[in-house]
Image (tube, rainbow over all chains, first blue to last red; front, side, top):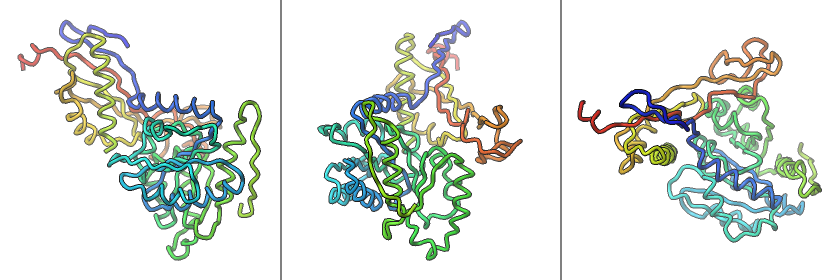
Length: 243
Length: 122
């Protein structure tokens, strides 16, 4: 940062600073904390009504069967409805009520973890506030940014919201049981995903029929096994009947 | 109101730097805004005016410089620009280019001091 006297009356300060620096710093501290405790973290982002919560419930059930200790933080503008639903299958679940704010920030995750022993957690799922725009800017210290879209939302959703869909490492299609009812052209949608994010992995799911739930749980677990803890990878066995 | 969070962050960062440089009042804040950064400039401007009240930035102007999308083509080993907006493939060889080099930035580039006498002269 240098101050330069541009003229006798004007001082210019070169700042060169990212606006989201404050959040990135908090996210980096979280990432360090997660890493030290061996916790892997996924940040789940979608529009409202995509079916994040129901899918999280099914994934938590699957992870519990595989012996993965899961915790969930869920963000909403108001109510703790989602946390109450998830808590039925995952005891370490906490609601973050943003009181109108359209996204979660790293400092809120820090507050949300208060009192939890991260040594008891293998995987933290963060269900972000339903919103396709703002949450994608805010790093929460996650290992895996996951974008979800339902088949009811239209084939071109990834093109309409490139900011999220081009930066997610994993894209989850939900409500696959409704493909026919909606007249959804799934091939076109996946072409659109590839156009906007050639590197992303795509998983088709249905919380209702269970399609893709095991594979999703397995991919979240791969995020765990891919990164050894204390020099020794933890092994999680999950079948992939539907892959 | 995502832009309000951003406006507060801008005010906070620039205020801190202004104090460090013994600048009482800020004139112009120049921002670099990537075309893919997802920010609505008008909303940010609107939120900024509220966030700046009671700070050295009260009455300051935000100026925006746009940053276009560039990406790395692994096949051609060069930085390229997309043929069409939001098509992340190489315009020459058509291979996918997932690695963006610019277009997502949201940065405070620099700011200027505003003098009371400059205001009087207006």
